[in-house]
Image (cartoon, rainbow, N blue to C red; front, side):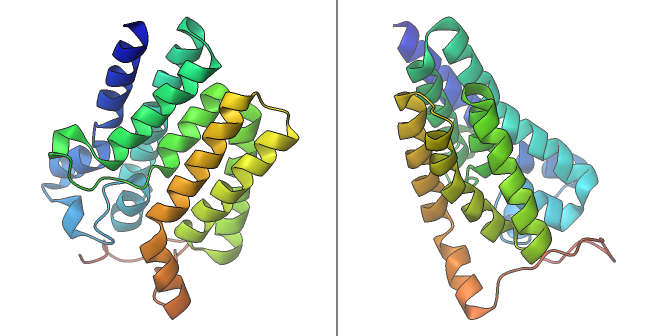
Length: 203
């Protein structure tokens, strides 16, 4: 019973579409009609800048961190990663948006790893940052970090629940970025400007 309550709570936390809510509240707009149409932190940041994007990054990370940490502290590593997976599922198909398409789970997955395997999470974050600064594609940086996660988890000697979860999370992130892979191959993917100029990008 305790595990079921944990997983349901984790899914509900993951379902909170902070990107959608924040843009509605502060801009009176639907983020799903802007930029890539994604409700996640990356699209919010790209369209509205860091002042709105950074809080969404932190909130999306927290959606994975809190359930996974509770799972570890109250139960064990296995329940921790299961709770993290439930939060990612909620972020991808949020209840509060009628199970419509949500985010690509990158920030939420990072939060899970910060809870269950902090060194893995920090290493993956470093891979993301370096890749982003070099190529300036958030999608490419996210996929590079995803590929690195199971390798790093294995090198750090993480327990089997974390290893299995790291592989599953990596596969999920790559699959959810299939449209981005197509745009990268065609040279159509949005390349970030390190210095924001002008007004928010049109939808």
